[in-house]
Length: 101
Image 1 (cartoon, helix red, strand yellow):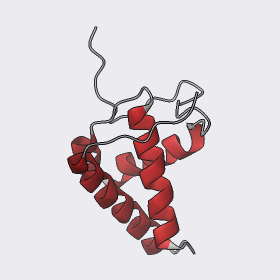
Image 2 (image 1 turned 90 degrees about the vertical axis):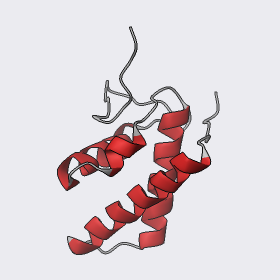
Image 3 (image 1 turned 60 degrees about the horizontal axis):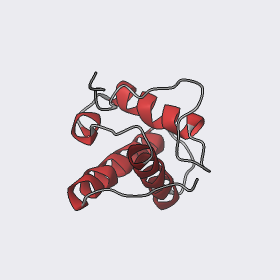
Image 4 (image 1 turned 60 degrees about the vertical axis):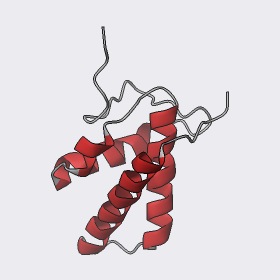
């Protein structure tokens, strides 16, 4: 199965703002990063997860405090199977959309 990268234009706008904010947090912490590389990695990770079985509530994620934002972004980066777009090790982002029973 290949990874899907589908998001609406509005979702992509929010994903880009989230990735910019995370890159700024890394820089503020003194991390030696290339911001555009980090932003692209985050954008691809968020889009892949959202499109491949774990729909995200990007509005809530964008408005999260720094700790919870980083929890989800770092958790996704760590637990994303980049061949399938699925999350592993039972990781579920705090800002995943609520499942309807």
